[in-house]
Length: 452
Picture 1 (cartoon, rainbow, N blue to C red):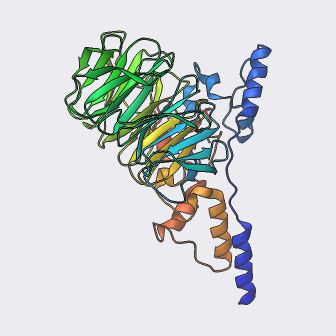
Picture 2 (cartoon, rainbow, N blue to C red):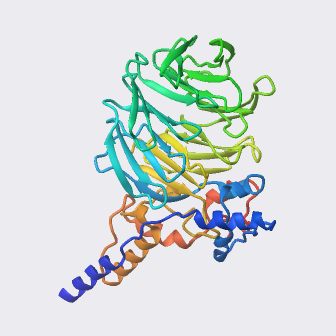
Picture 3 (spheres, rainbow, N blue to C red):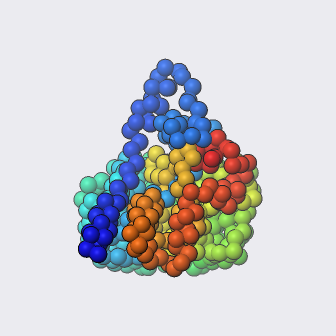
């Protein structure tokens, strides 16, 4: 008996999970070599050895956009003292993720190995909004008391605007040249601020209820806002006047964002369970309307591909849209991305990693799938069959359970009870219904992670 117990302990020690690391330096160097010598991009076949040929997302801007879909779960991170996470944001160079918590703390997480780096008390109350300037030299955060704080990249606070709003600040956006920024709050108004001296310049009043979101056009002098009064309003920041109102929604408009690359499109989500894309070049014509069975919570445009954006839902699912490919449904769905409703999304500036935060008090990182990755679409984020430590690596858990079974030990308890072992045995199966939901992608597709 003692020998079998010793063997079992050795097995437990042997299968220690390795932290996944995402390194983008090699693909960038290879892409630079191809461009320098005028060589065509290496073609990616559905075979494991072709993972070396996958280029950064920028290389597929006009080609196979579906390669850039961050569909594979990579890592789960959470603070030691767990709080609800209202907002997350990547640093401008993409090396770290800034996580703002309900307790007013900033915590930094490494962007390649996803380990914790540091934590600091930034606000006295919950941090509700956070954004970086376009040049990456400054960061602005707003809290539930209506206080605005301006930070340097090293998180040295240089200015505090106390009482900027009378209610909690919901969103912040910089102008194109970073000389001004706009804030919106639950006090029904938007305010334009001069960044150089921190003085208020204009008050944009016209909404009849809480203003949930705002954004500044990347090229033009145009501000968009979304409110609890079911309206989207477009504003002229020079005069402070509302120039247009959109009456397409029947419930609270939660989030609205301009297309970050060109600014030709405007996306918005609402509590009426609809996601709409407007073309601002043609009198705000509706380009896409998609209705769901669950409420949406937040959205984020892809930083590289101008037609791709991601929507997070109340049930914890992620939906990736590519309006150039399909105007009627998502191109990819992660049905069990989080256990509770997702509160914030943030794309790495390179575009290869998507970070999501939810009310389950965790941050999860999503990357592009490798060619023929058996775990890309067969883990608990797709089949909802969890086992202990599943987020550290599916293969290690499988091997540990198999070794334990040889010594007569029971597999680790999971949410599914007896179904846990059946979920493990199905990891080698590639017949996943999620793949069939991708338009034009069959089981023998040459796209990374989608073929067999």
